[in-house]
Length: 390
Image (cartoon, rainbow, N blue to C red; front, side, top):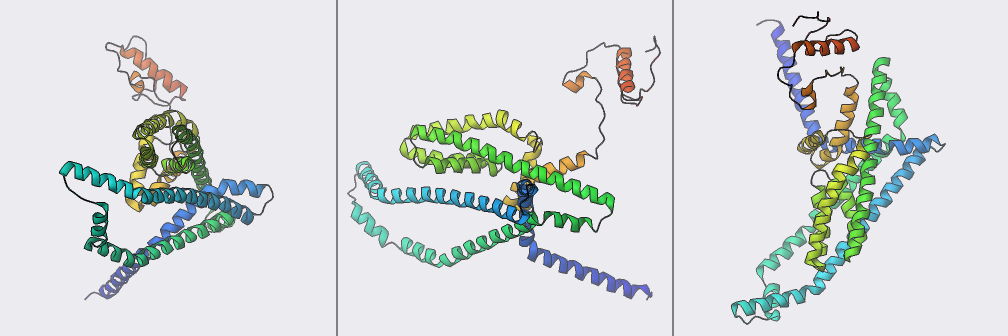
């Protein structure tokens, strides 16, 4: 046996053990890593506001605390508004349930010539095995629901804690990261960090402004139609339509349509028409103007990034996909060398005219190369063609 074979076998086993250990640790820590990633992007989003307040003489920790306090108050206010709306709707449905049941029983009696009564139906429902099993399953599921709620609150607290440290100690974190890199790499890291702050903050602020405009527009419509809970529905439509990618518009419009249907079925049609028209106005007029200087990426790229982010990390990936792709695109754009485009009709979507002299095309190519410093930019033509030669 060669002398190197035992050492090679031990090394291979050690590498396999390290791989298994790393895989196990990654599976155990994937939840924490996702929380840290969300916290990092949240810290990038609030970085401009914290930096402005810190530049005016306020301590960075206090500025971060005030920004988080505003975000917390806004989130709690939204939950309270939406919860009061849902609670009111549930109470109304419970109060109107006997009337609904009477109308259904009357329709069944008239259609099928039966003789049912509400008392008999209620007794059969209360003593049914299905209802008893449902109550037992609900009672046993209370502990699971409580565990899920507590886990969600702990995860939210973890995200806020990490994002607070990332935002409050941003300069210290950048210094610690750059201290282990050479000066050339330090400049690239700082540039990437600055681009990430601009793109993430710009994405958040542009979406917030569009959410405000959308909420005001839908609030005016709901008030005109007399739909109840107009403020809560407007806040719901504004936030969900802007911060839930791809399906947010349809998900946001479903709830006000349902509430409007309880008032008048035609009101639901009016709400649907307004949602469709406003979505076209937002896509073609409002969104390009607001996001052209913040998150300037093609709609197809944005849609593909959302799908890829959802496939990788679920809803979290869908939320951070667009600012992440915009940051990567802006950072890599500085390393891509671009040239002047030749004056060709096909560049403008038109076909070249038949019978166009070759000499004309060569002269155009020579002019383009002359303006570009003598470089070859069109078909390898670098020298001026002699007159009379094709």
